Length: 154
Image 1 (tube, rainbow, N blue to C red):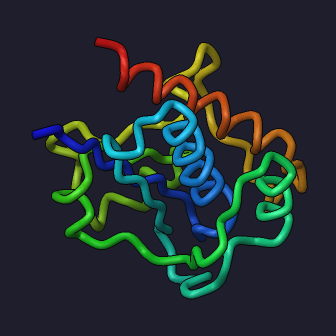
Image 2 (image 1 turned 30 degrees about the horizontal axis):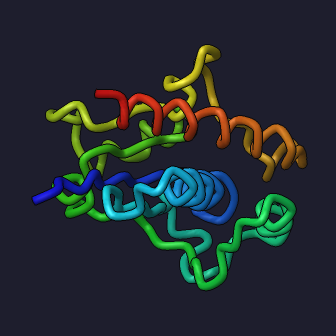
């Protein structure tokens, strides 16, 4: 039986960066013909946007690249997510800090920063503050391509 890799992308509100990473990764996995090897989702550390759809400029940026995120609404991480997912991918250090009440100090080493899978480690640009959805798109695409490459190299 094929082992499925379960990945959870996390940001503050789950309406900009983490859903963009979720749907970019789903797109890349699909393009690679590996849909049956991955389960991919996203969530927030906060409760601020619970139930809200993906922020319209994020939706538009993904649509420009043929990626649809219809039906996605923000949800908050839970303690159970740590046990369920194999990897929990944060957009910045604030996200990691805000995960600690839920996940403790990451005893299994599941938490990573998305851009650690690129040749330019750092934080995914937060378009909520910058207004620069192109930079966020590039960060998510680069990080997800690097992550997929790492996970599919044998």
